[in-house]
Structures are given as C-alpha cells and as structure tokens.
Image (spheres, rainbow, N blue to C red):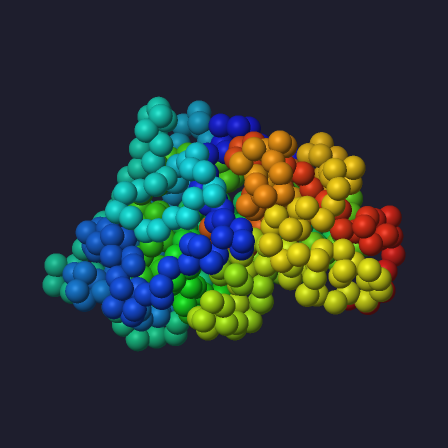
Length: 411
C-alpha cells in the first residue's frame, strides 16, 4: 500500500540492535526508581481530574480495575473521526506523529514528544474534565476485576472512534490467509497512535504481555497521550486503514507471517528472543524480543514441518552478522521485496556495510513490515525513516529452497 509522506511522522521508535546491548545496558533500577517512571503522566491525568485526587493517592503499581476504567472512559471525550467539510463540528482528538529518529531510545518525559511545532492548521482538542467535589476523581483506586493490556488498548481505540479501522487492519490480514489474533487490529492502532511505551533496558521487569493486567501507571501514560492529542492522527489511522492491501501469499509465506503476527503487542525486551519468561543480562523478565531476537525466533527457534534447511539459513544472532551472511549478489533491493523477506537498516542506507546495520524486521507485503522496536512487536509502513535507512534484504525462504512452494502440510 502507499502511504502519503505527510502522514509518516508517527513515533515508532526503533531501539538499537542486540549488538549494542552490552554497551548500553544500564544497571538495574530499584523499586523506588521504577515506581515513579510515569510521574509526569500521572500528574497530567490527576490535573485533568482523573484516576486520583492527588499524585500521592495514585497507587501507580496497582492493577487497573474494570470499575476504574469504566469511570475513566465516561469522563474522557468521545470523538469519532471527522472528515473535513462534513459540517460536523465534533472535535477530532488525535496524536501528532513525529519525525523522531526510530533508532532513538525513548523514556517518559513531561514534554509531549508528539507535538510537531512545524504543523499548522485550525484543528484543536477539547478536553472534557469531570470532577466530583465531594467524592473521588473518576477512575480512582477501587477493587474489581483487573484489565489486561490488550483490553485496555481496545477500550481506548473504541473511545477514539477507531474500532472500524482496527477491524479493517485485521480483516486484510485474515483475507490474505494470515490468522491474525483478535487483538491484531486494536494493538496495531494503539501503537500507531503511540499509546504504548518501551521502558529502558534496566527496567525491562516493568514490561507487560498483552494478556497481563495493566498497571495504573501504564494506563496513566496512555491516557496522558490521549489527552495531549492534537488533531491529525486518528484521521491518519482511519485513512491508512482504508488503503490497506496485501499481495497473494504462497504457503510458506503464510506460515512465516502467521507465526510473526501471533506476537503482535509483545513487549520489546533488550536481548529477548522468547515469548515466555526469560533471563536476559541477569534479569528475569517477561516474554518479548529485541529486533534481531524477533527475527531469530521466527526463523531460527521455530520448528516448521517440512522446513528442510530453513532453520540453518540464518546463523548469526546479531543484526550485522545476519545481514552479512548473504553476499552482494543475493541481497534484495527494496523494489524486489516479497513477504517473509528479512529487512536490514543502517545509517548509510543502501551504502551501509554489515557493521553499519543496527535494525532488522520482516516484510509483511503491501508496503508494510513487522518488527520488535520501541512499541514492542508492531507493524509499520516501509516509508520515511525506514525507506531512508533501508540497506538490503535477504530471502531465507529462497535460501532454503522453499520460495515457490505453494502447498505444505503440518504447522
């Protein structure tokens, strides 16, 4: 699919490849430090009369409960996507995508990184604040069933009027023969809007699986992002969902992509390569992947019936080793990409050498890729930063002699 360049300023931050982990990994942070990681966002939601009467009463590490979520949603503005010229004066609430270099590791700050000072226009954001002078703020701590990360994301996507867009994202994959999980559409939208965050490597214990109970701190981060929306991104997501298309896939491409998309919404874990609990750099953390760990999981650690030599095609664990395992004659250019190809990115683009490669992903088709980066396992158009930094790709299915196999048996 084609995505107009003006929409490609969104914030899918890509962390550096696994190769730099030993250099960049910070000492493990203590509980006192991690408990306050979302303090700026907590201050923002409390200032809007949500989730607690004060910052000190917030309880950031407690799970968000269903009664709390219901109260929050009732107090937030409900704004569906509005097309220009319809005569509807409903305000569109969105985030503004940015041009931030995806290789930058981000941490929570009090400055909204989604605001682009170069944007002009008349769209504004109207925030509805509900206060209860003699009672707790909407969404204040209370007992009840906890809310999972994916259920929370689904609720916010619905609140923004983007349920149909989420359904289209999933439908297109299903139509192509990819058994995308039920959360695929809403997790795609949530990450396109920047509602999720990657924690620093030293705080990977904070990362959550899609099925895990979301903490109040994580919820506050997402709600603060929503409250800061400036008016472009929900429309961008809606427009993008309307133009989605996927090529016809052969049997092996479907197998590879089925497995890859099953991890949508899993967190970015520095050095991670497992969907279950793992010990990385001395920390026991949840399931998740770094960029090369994700490719390693899909092509190296997964056993496929009748795979032949597929598992042995990729040998190295790091991005620069993976990228250097194919000679120049077998490198795939951007205009020749096929679903299932492994993509490599470097600061010098097509002039990069293997030692310059610092990110990798898997090509979905239709101009999209799937990767593990700053928002975890997510999909993103191969445009903007990705097009500029694209170095080359390799085709493991062809290397294993499976490129033109259209009928397989087994999983």
